[in-house]
Length: 388
Ligand code: MG
Image 1 (cartoon, helix red, strand yellow):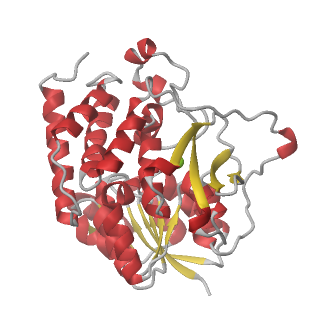
Image 2 (cartoon, protein in one colour; image 1 turned 120 degrees about the horizontal axis):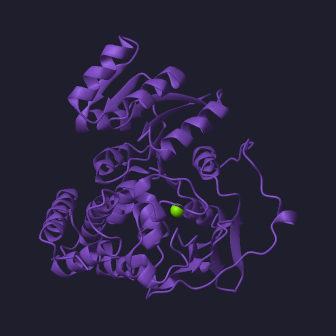
Image 3 (cartoon, helix red, strand yellow; image 1 turned 180 degrees about the vertical axis):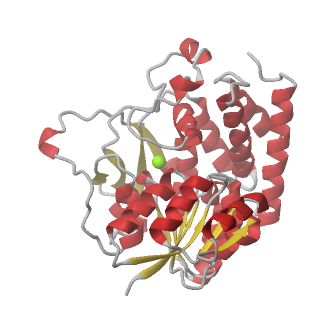
């Protein structure tokens, strides 16, 4: 029996890889729905390749264009209603949640509430709304399976293990494009420097987050929610080769790690195949040709964003949502050449200072914190309050 799949964020980096995985196993999957933003050409190509019943796009204009070019072959919806329809498609057993940003929150929650397996690649789901999502999953019985390489590694290392016997999670980080840069050099880092990621090919936003280590900070918050481990027992280690995708240390001192080539198709496939493993048609790791692997502690002076994420995670409530939203605004401004690289962290510090945390927020309160942080971050940048 083939499984029905819905892909939220199909035209992004994860979405495209997910389609490759699905097309590599044509007997196992049927794509029922695709949701994307405004990348019409890529979406049309995907519609031809996977023949979904439903597609959702961000706005009415885009929907009209897609409709006019696909005819009656596929139902086209738009906006939040469209995204939710894709996420809750009655024949989708698995929902791949790979939107970038807060737009993924509501559709992902609806999929969880319906008890579907949710393959999570959308960071905001657990960063901004970890408590709501994990509670909803408990109630509906939905399985949250991570797609991110680090969390997939931990998820795999924890199979068959008791949570009470876990001592520490070790999240590995490549260190990003500026791993060995001094603060003085970072002051002058341009967009092209920051987008030159050593190991992974990803979207622009996450590549910037990787250079600030904010991405790793968000992954710490995600790991906290996903695996129920307190922040002081989650550590980050810089591992430039990105071969060890993460590790778990147990109470007896044993450390289990998951290794593989840095290729997102592997964790995406595992999120779909779990609890089974299917043949991987991707490049393999040759352990006899690996040579040496390096590990070292991250430098908190050069990469303060990692510390901000721990701080926000410990503060709890709406703080991670505010941090995440402010970061989206700051990264966007940087990518458009409006602020220098180090102004990203200035904006984040200011937002965390200004934010009044609300505890145990509902989704509405989280969206309020998100909107507040976006507006405030944009104001701070416009007033030049963050220029160095
Ligand atoms: Mg990752």
